[in-house]
Image (tube, rainbow, N blue to C red; front, side, top):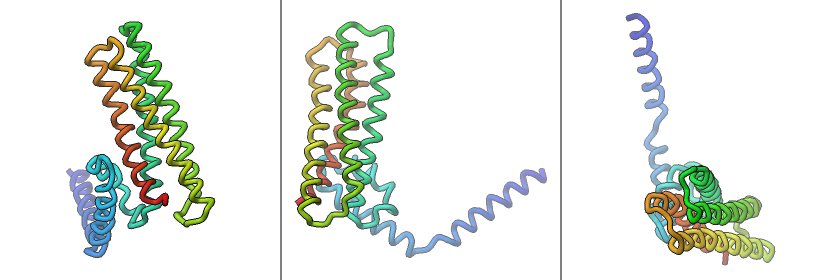
Length: 197
């Protein structure tokens, strides 16, 4: 009983401390940052998907368009890596037909290329700050090229599914995994396009 009372007291203290450090100014800042992200996401292909991912980084982004773009590209890298792991796991099934194994192998190759192109983009982007120098413009163009190529890789995978005999349940798993990458990549590219002149 004593242990329970001590636990309750400790939780009460933590709640009181966190609530006392909370301020209307802090909430106002968060709302401002989230509104900025929402406005920026409204110009992307999948605005709700964009906002759902990026709003979690409001404190990091604040109202900086370049930072928002960097976060978006890095999130896309993470989603692409997750998709590659999913495809790898699916490809290890012993119940696959020859056609299904072939589709998964092609998709894995395409998403592997996607990861490489996105990582190149993120690495290049890390050095940029949005200045309008000739050098930066060239680097922004390179990023756009890599990200556009990554989108092509993603859709090459889903196009291949329709041409082969693949179980509907497996199709859905592959397409769901690829869609997350394609949507976030498209959104991140839209944000890159807003900055690159």
